[in-house]
Image (tube, rainbow, N blue to C red; front, side, top):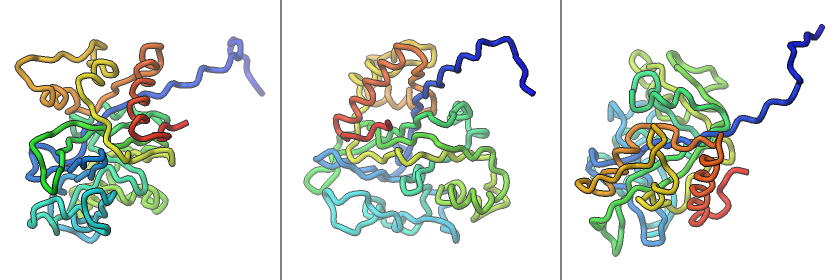
Length: 277
């Protein structure tokens, strides 16, 4: 039997996806850099794992294939870009763009707490700090760049025990799952893992996140534009605003949809055809 709830049966408006930003990869706390080559391609170096000693499910820096061959030899791994002592260390390889996952300690880490509100259909962009590589050496030029995105398709939340076989098949390559399997007594610590659709991408060329883009696209948590303190560098300001994971564009209104279009235009200028349909 059906029941009339008094509505006019008008179909609900489809939910508009939100765009989120997560700061990932090596940063000023690490003794190595992610290189950006002269043609705009780059390598994304993950951070060392905690603990750094490899376990049976770990990935080492020397295990991770380089994404492209611009500026270095075919067949190389990310091990080229770290000091010798890091070669055999376990790496927190996250996000990973083979099975398209990203994990975070959403319930334990204040920096990631906002990700509790991510829903399927949302887009999670990754921002990274890159160092220019020119003529076979790093320069003193650094910048923030968009490195890729997940169009969120599924979410494994609050993991406190080994996932099921089906869940391991989908999420098992993620660094948080690997760490949990290495040390079950400590690292089934309620982390979340986001699974991306097949439309998710690791970008070929990094998209500069500079003041010009930020002023056109991003807002503060209260909706206002970013503030640029003359006593701080542009890089410091961008780093400050992107330290925590958060929603940067809500496309439920016209302003948000306009800013999203500007962001995707900047991405596709350097990476044609990557926008999810």
